[in-house]
Length: 153
Image (tube, rainbow, N blue to C red; front, side):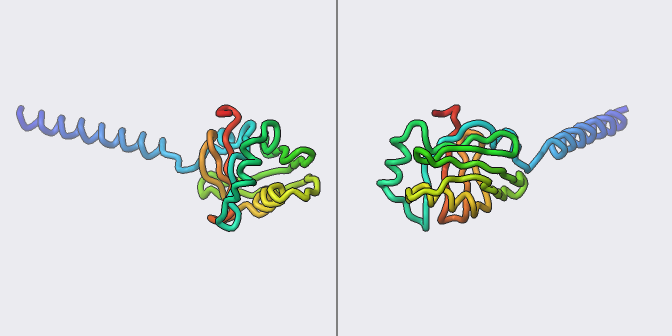
């Protein structure tokens, strides 16, 4: 009788371990939820160009209220850089390897240095990092823009 209880206990524990492992492994998804990350309004809060931050341009970003933003909706986006410089287009990303590509379908020409840097980074974007609260769009490790969700502003 004692021997049968040991086998039942071992079988029961083994089944529990298998069930927990199955739930854990099947429930894991190493891919980001892109519809959650890229949805809504984002304020461009920082940039880095050729591994440099320029204080006067950062001040321009941080002191502006209704400019330097991008709104994502589905697979399209629109936004405003400095006054009078709008952008729009489509985007595509992979949540598994965090690649990111943007196709600017409309942008105004701008003499503004910060606008040109942001547009260049967007046109040449290769990846992203972050979540719905803070997203970094990267051309590479030395050229990127940071954005904060409108929920945080």
